[in-house]
Amino acid sequence: MASAMYNSGVDIIYHAAGGTGNGVFTEAKNIKQKDPNKNVWVIGVDRDQVDEGKVSVNGKDYNVTLTSMIKRVDLAVQDLSKKAKDGKFPGGEQIEYGLNEDAVGISPSKDNVSDDVLKAVDEWKQKIIKGEVKVPLKPTK
Image (cartoon, rainbow, N blue to C red; front, side):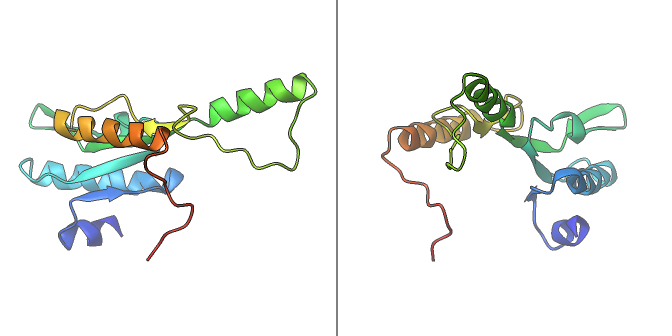
């Protein structure tokens, strides 16, 4: 599927596919090996996937990982474990962990993202945290 997408002109794939996302990295690296001047990118998911994007072509190192979107499940597990230990487990409640809790965000590996894009991402992040922008729970038309 990644091959068909890249061949159709797509240059960035956000795979959000867990382990099956490895195929996206493989295809992007294959393309880079065939043509080092062609930029195709992968956005990793759940953790920093910068290592998955490393590829060497004719002795020159490249990385096809544009960035990764981090989901800090460890924070939720730690918080709920502490609440359970303290006898305050909120069974039956929906608990959200987001930007305010630093539970989601962009990876620390940002070599392939320009400073102006990082600045814009941070500005929008702050607007969301301050409540100036509401992120919908469901897609809107």
